[in-house]
Length: 316
Image 1 (cartoon, helix red, strand yellow):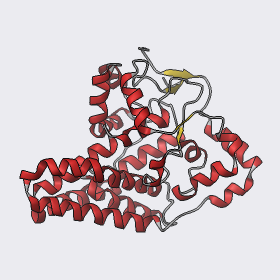
Image 2 (cartoon, rainbow, N blue to C red):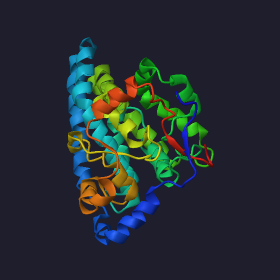
Image 3 (tube, rainbow, N blue to C red):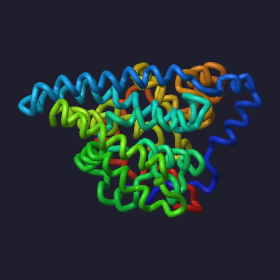
């Protein structure tokens, strides 16, 4: 196993490629903007999670096993879609008004039990601006995290299972910005009130279902392959990859990750059109067709570790 991250003397590749693509295909500018219909998907997904949680809550804690099964088979997919809504709200791609996007992010975050939408948004914008900068890119695992996990299959599987909570430790190493502001505290308050209401009206099994949906949506689940696909690599010449498999249909095209980094002002619904317009810039890049296959490869291939990331040489 490598002892540290891959390092690159070059700046991140996306700004330069964006300029090249726009030079060849200026019509892509027409894809930029907002998609307010994303709010309708958000409301449907939040309502669906509430209904399922309520039904399982009424069943009682004797049916904890059913809550876990439902979370793995249904809730994880719904919560994952809500994370994509939060992601688009972070980039102001739902409404033109910034405050409305923050409100959408907080509403989307309600079924996630652990409030993180606003903090995620702050870190995610830093990730775009400073991809690979260890001191500013919270998408990169902390060194202690990578050393602790190593490249043993069982440790990587456990890391994926706990990924939701390990992400919460990373902002502490970011010294140049804070994840706390008024919106952060509003999100925390909304989440606490929502959680209390779920337990009060429907019981603890409702909260168990929602918490399990969160853990599976971000961790040891076929959807978990997304976190490996985006920036983990065994070939450091390409530090961002896309996924073009069928789960994009219910994951709101989040697999189009190179396209998103090249054009973060394009909403999820139009990302496939970027590749369709400029195939010469994407077809030659390494991509994935199966998140599940990638997840298993990451776990069982001892060449993979949390150090399988590219950092900028000046910041590693």
